[in-house]
Length: 118
Image 1 (cartoon, rainbow, N blue to C red):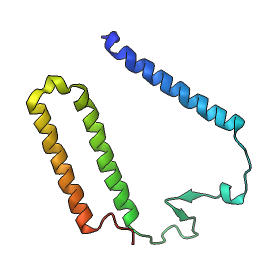
Image 2: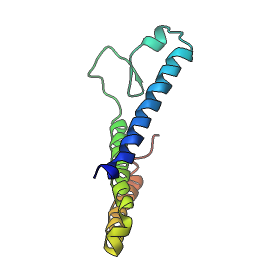
Image 3: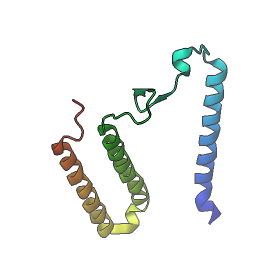
Image 4: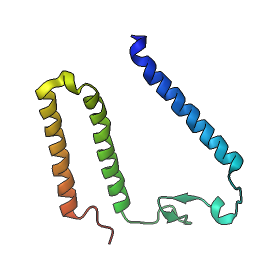
């Protein structure tokens, strides 16, 4: 059982080590020139305002939700691709139905103008 998960463990360890290494190298070798604009708080693509209850465009949330939806699509496709040969024809067509439902939803959102930023 351990032999099946050992490559995944090695991959995770190498990923963490590379991430820590690159962050450390960036901190050591990168320029550090802080100023007031860089130190200012920044969120959601908008400047910080005095009033926390200020209204702003809801399309930001719509795009974020669409990103999460299609990101999860990829998360479901990875395990499916790993066991693709064992699933056979039924597994293939099940994923095609899943993808078709997502494509129909994407086309619906596109036609409704959810992806427009005008």
